[in-house]
Length: 424
Image (cartoon, rainbow, N blue to C red; front, side, top):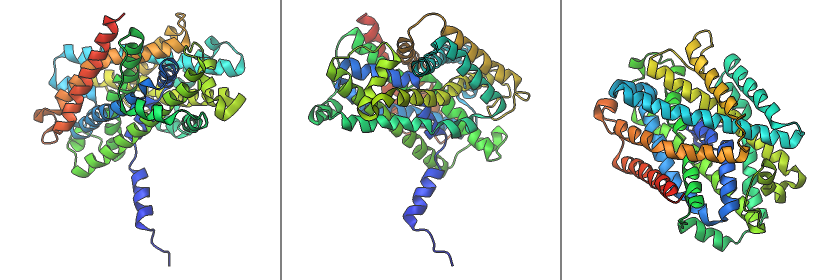
């Protein structure tokens, strides 16, 4: 007779079984733009910005929790909810913010993947950007995002090399602890732009739309094919979503913290304060991997890019499809959702075109994060308002702490952006 599994084992199994959209969102959050932004941050300012990881965690978690709540309770994606409760000007304004940020971000991520691959192969990066674009489009058209995530999520584990490297670099842990718990802001355009970039790459517009849409996709996968079947959410469903989102955001911020710490301890500590190429960014991993640092860095960028770029293109398609009330999902075959997949293809094509403007890849990745940081606050305000209205979410309105964190997120990001422009 088989022995019953210990309760602790069963709890762990159930915990991982319940992880879904929130975990994928957290993994996509550490995209090539994020890796580059955190690397530039640590190299430029050392340990000083480490406190941003602690501060940004509750902010990003609150916003993503509200987006998950919207999807679960209304049975619609974010754009679909806005379409029902706000004028078309608000709807298409929100979609415009998203599409502008996403197209630039797609281009930046493709460029970052290509630059890292060029570093390893010696083949010019402009040859690799079309390769990655076509590969991602083909995978999305003839497979599904879930299958892509199952394969490429393993490459993102390379990012944990930054945690090991941080300890091998032997930083001054007293200084690290002080920088982590004592916020310090430098009143300069460079520091404030970096702060906007950090907030923009952790609290990105595309993640808001993606989170809500993926909660809907999960319900569709359970057989709830109509909005009426999906409307409403039980306490258990909201609790599972909360665990999922908090877990995803925690691991996203953990990686962020250690990339900043590692680049501060390796690059900044040795006077290398300006990162201009993928090779320079990869040098942070040398204490762990030696000459293999470039390979680790490249694998990390490719893995996160293959997860994030489909999310960027997909969230734009979900937003437009919901705004126009089209059928559309990444789980459909293209023949069933032609207009949805047309938006995916156009977003990818525009992102690819932006790579041939002539921007430096590392700078473009950083600027993508800054752009997200500037465009996110109005969308956060929209999310807070929607989840505060009983006519939208019924009795499942966001709690006061969640709403306060949402308003604080919008205020902090707006203040950082204003400060950046004021000091330029």
